[in-house]
Length: 353
Picture 1 (cartoon, rainbow, N blue to C red):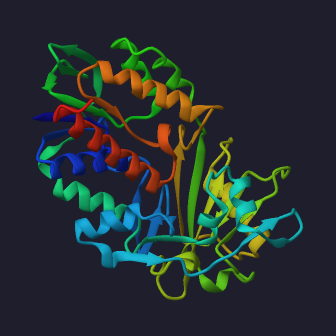
Picture 2 (picture 1 turned 45 degrees about the horizontal axis):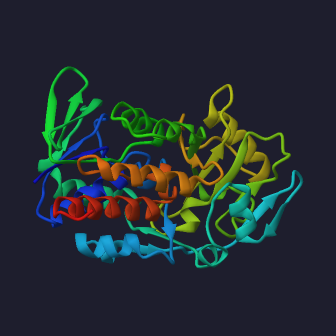
Picture 3 (picture 1 turned 30 degrees about the horizontal axis):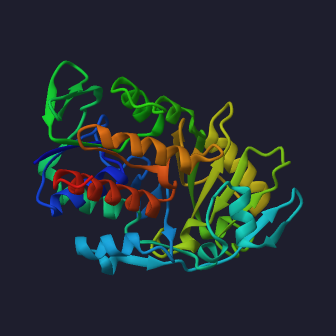
């Protein structure tokens, strides 16, 4: 059976992996020229720089299980530094990690937050790279999807530029706003409402320093900023303190999260961090990542609405949806969502309803 997976973020890659393991003929269509979606790991002068998620909740089993299947279980690393502070405008004061998560809009159980985070020795790009390597023959980059049509119990997927793919089943591992438009065209009631899931814009800036440039002791994993602050920075992670191997000896890597604003975010981040952490001199370098549509924020009764949409998919040829827009925004949730979508397609193709 031929299956098309639309989207090569971690959810789409996980869905494709599940389908390949189920002996399906899989093609993955990705509009960008790289896999991973909002997971981006770069290496700069011995530093490991994360553009998106830098880890996953230690109590969630999805990433370790996937890593074991991919042969990279030994690359999983645990969080070194624990604890979060709040910048009140005058000083950094320790606060409960659950409170910090709430201030950042992170939805997770208190017990999961208390268990801390884990990552990969080479950054969160490692599972993406491992999946992409094993699925290399299935990946098609610069293939944006323009339309979806059901025909005689199967699907035809139109590609931007004029070509098309035929498939027995489809997984839409796209942001909710993109999936909603496609579902509307095939008559799924309520599909368009998925576009109402709000994706919040954000900017992350990584800055590298020599350790002696920072006079304030970097205690814990980072800090959040009080909601009523006039600062553009909303939070900061001490990346080279939080996880091992993020910076060369004698150096420090920090990552700031900023609300979108005018001007150069790297300049703004350095200026505000200098005041808070006592930084002397300019950064060795900085790297900004812009997410015009970053993490989703769910409406009330979101889970009920998604369940209703999925129920309506049963009357169509095999079709599943997966990703942060539906089942949780964390990396583990996206892996789980993708794998469940793959299992749903396998069930439908085997004759299950």
